[in-house]
Image (cartoon, rainbow, N blue to C red; front, top):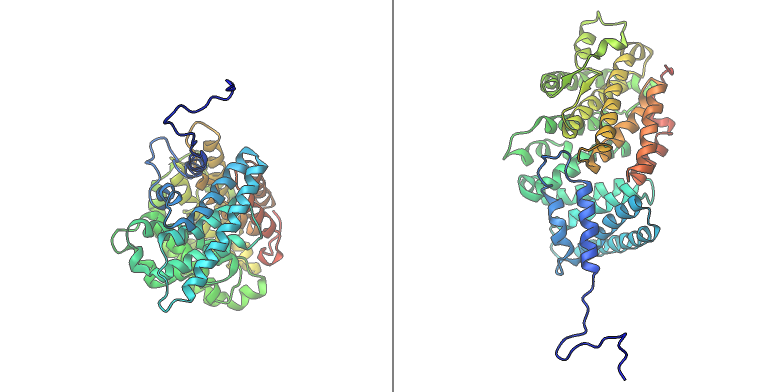
Length: 424
């Protein structure tokens, strides 16, 4: 007698039930993409390499990219949903992805002709870095993945990065390599003349591109001048001060020239740089610099706020080595604090937008982690340093940035990176 509680398939119909796994995987990936997607209600959907991830996930020919996609997607979902079981699965896929990346490198080394890195290869390295953004396996892993992505792009050459997805990947990696260079003290290939020019041969550079140019070249200049940190000790800064002062004047001129375009993006509030009351405003050079330091502005959107934050970061990186001497501390401490205040204002703006009704982007947090870290390290103001640490702690626990913020918070304790400035 047939059990009615277990219906049998009708004749001619299959009992096969398709797996829901592909649907769930695409769901996790969609969540990952949307986290880094729109930053305003009117923004266009994310283009470039992120837009290719769904097809990469379902590609059976180049299935090696599947593991890092799932690792990053599940890591984000697990941390935001606080689902430990999903986090454990993400770690397993992360390990699988690393093994497959190593296998491709080994297989390539055995060939007579070197393998030309594909879009998928570069994406794998970036996705592994994104996993480290959510969960840090060690303090250096994020930087290693970014360096790996840069070497893959280097193998393709700057000519291949002028258009399309490779140009998008180049822009992403170039941006993140700013901080890799600062922290690891290793020069970036993107600071060379050919990488500063050839990838942009088919389009004009935006203001954001030109700000990133300065930030890309500046760490290289610090390294070539023998300054092995963004905030050198007094003796190191003194020994190399003359050479770097000459180099710094070039960067200062570039940033002063960019200021009218930066200022045009902003809507001023009642606050201004007079709130810092610098005692050296009668100095002509300092007076010019102070014109580039508004401390109270309304930002029209998160993309503009990003450009503003990194413009002020460039100023901080230029001025911090000069502050290695007593004269430098007296002359530039207020100026550095003004630029730090602008970055902290942007961080407040990011939190205000992402907690409200405006669409948010995970990039809003990710791209501001290291500027906050640098404030922790070099701001002369104890209040500013504590404010930056507070943001990093919050973003670590509440905004999905657990891995990268943990690295930033731990490394911000390093004495090698701190200016010898009196607490104000």
